[in-house]
Length: 115
Image (cartoon, rainbow, N blue to C red; front, top):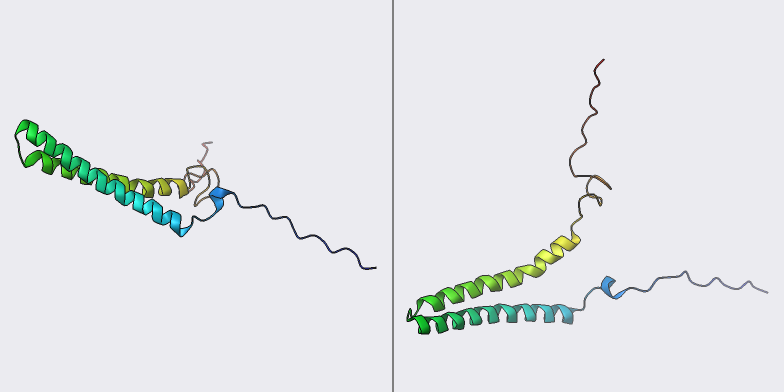
């Protein structure tokens, strides 16, 4: 009689945050970012235009509002990159180029004791 074969080794299932995001999810994320950018510019322009009509400063506040909208839109586009960079960068004391507990600075020689 042959011995029973060993069962396959246990493999822990992947958790949702460990899986690579699907291409569709990434596309949806970028389309959302594009929408945010466009809405920021449009809201800035029309907000400035409304103030232009109220204050009778016709082209200036619409231009300033559109430029502020562009700046806000760029901030909205940069935000995901900064979040990813801070999430993936090693923190001080968690290991890095000089191991756990390191500060990243080269080690100093021990101080000489006086006699």
